[in-house]
Length: 192
Image 1 (cartoon, helix red, strand yellow):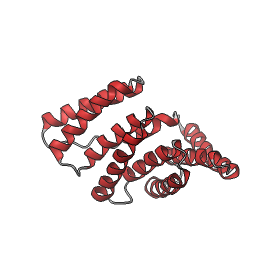
Image 2 (tube, rainbow, N blue to C red):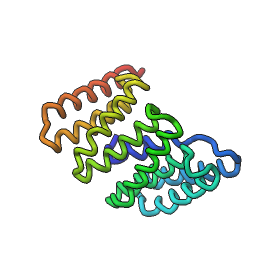
Image 3 (cartoon, one colour):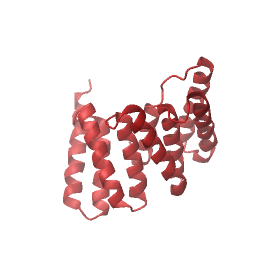
Image 4 (tube, rainbow, N blue to C red):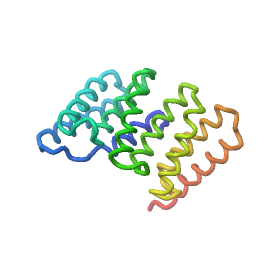
């Protein structure tokens, strides 16, 4: 998977919790499906207003501190990040992470996804010292929740390896990248 795409894909996987009213749920799901479709087509500018509408609907229907709101915030942040609009992305990622931690607990998989996505934002901006502890915390959460050989663990290992490459820590980067590659190879060899 393309590293640039991993954040939003990971975020959209955690969004599909039903809204209280069926009509609102259906509309919100349609909006998120449209965001994902536009994202996959690399039509980021067109996806932003749709993501904003999904966020608004979630906030109105569920309140500002619901995990679905965090998912919508995270998706909007990812759209901004992928377009290089880092100042717009950072507070959205941070708010999403705070909501997930409060609503779901600090060891939830959604928290790990939020940590990874915020770390990616910091990494692409060259803020390596801010990114590294976030990656490490995300890695610890996912290894505990999913096991040490899950594909989401491999993704975070690859992201952390990239950070280490950028900071000249090649030996550590190579070790993490090899571990991730072995995990992915084992997954593929286990498929029928």
